[in-house]
Length: 232
Ligand SMILES: O=c1ccn([C@@H]2O[C@H](COP(=O)(O)O)[C@@H](O)[C@H]2O)c(=O)[nH]1
Image 1 (cartoon, rainbow, N blue to C red):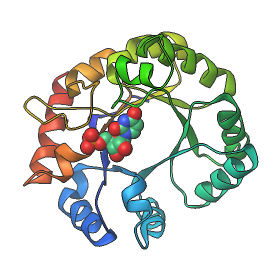
Image 2 (spheres, rainbow, N blue to C red):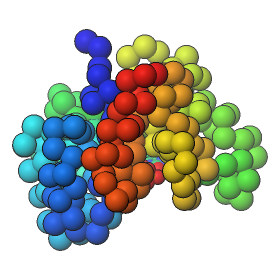
Image 3 (spheres, rainbow, N blue to C red):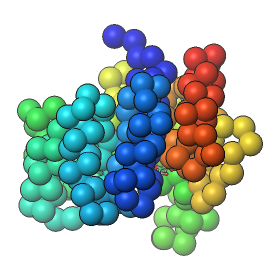
Image 4 (tube, rainbow, N blue to C red):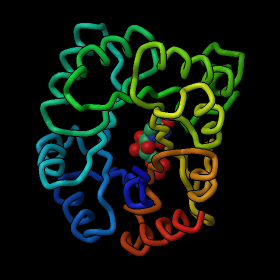
């Protein structure tokens, strides 16, 4: 089944509280059907209840908690997340973590995504962390390990999407944050790609938070991104 731009655009609800998130979801209406809930909203009072209710309302929800812990804790966390009815959950792309998450999600319908190299990092940041091989090599290594672990999708910059597809095979979701329409501020993102180029590179889903939720008119901002995706 081919996905429409609406299916592929994931708006990140990086907002301080549930009331603000409800306003944005209301304003975006039918234009957007897929939302990401990350640290800021998930850890706000009622944040996970909001994620569960959003999923129950028929929207798709990507819970971006980037789990990284001992296997038992990851398994229990994934089982609890699956009970919220969300569609996607992130873990860091460490083999033991990914295997535990995949085990726990089996049969639940929850798709586990492996975060390879954060889009806020570039080669110099990785060197500071002790990895001198550069972003591309680390993304490739982690994609291979992610596929061995059996995850359903990969999180990477759309700049690497072509290489990710070649390594991950035809079925993996390639979920790409760091999306910036022309003229939008990069902020702390370092590996940014425009919406149309991200799709051309092979991304299956585009994650966009600040360019939509911090816009004066979030609906107009989302529509402009969807139009660019349509034209890709
Ligand atoms: O590598 C990653 C993984 C996750 N993110 C998350 O995506 C959004 C992007 O927000 P913008 O405002 O569009 O920059 C944010 O919630 C991150 O936690 C990422 O950026 N990079």
